[in-house]
Amino acid sequence: MATEDRTKTTISLPDEVYDRLEARRRDGESLVEVIDRLMADDEATIYDGFGILAETDIESAVAEVKREMDEDFEKRIDEVSRQ
Image 1 (cartoon, rainbow, N blue to C red):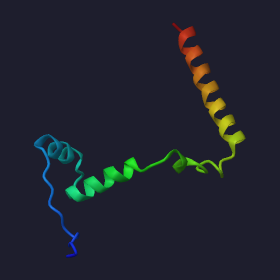
Image 2: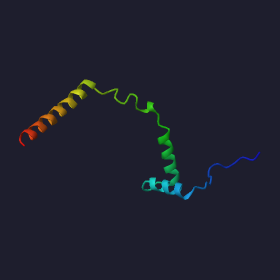
Image 3: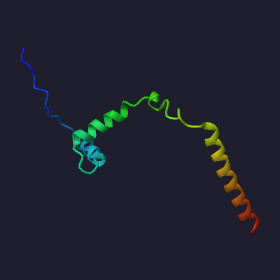
Image 4: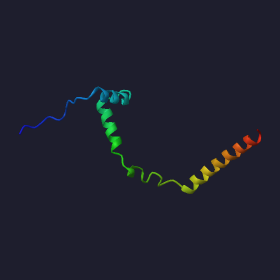
């Protein structure tokens, strides 16, 4: 059995598929890189984000968001009361 050289393979694409790939191409990116990037995006799982907040101090983060919301609320109340 002859071995096949898989370093290069030619494929045919319908024009609309080619156009969609072209539309996704970034500056300096080859079509192979576009296809590889899009395939990698499809391989993402829900587990990819686990642990992302492991070093976050949740209490401080919540307190900061609450403080910002309180400031925004007070600012809006002032604006409404001046009308």
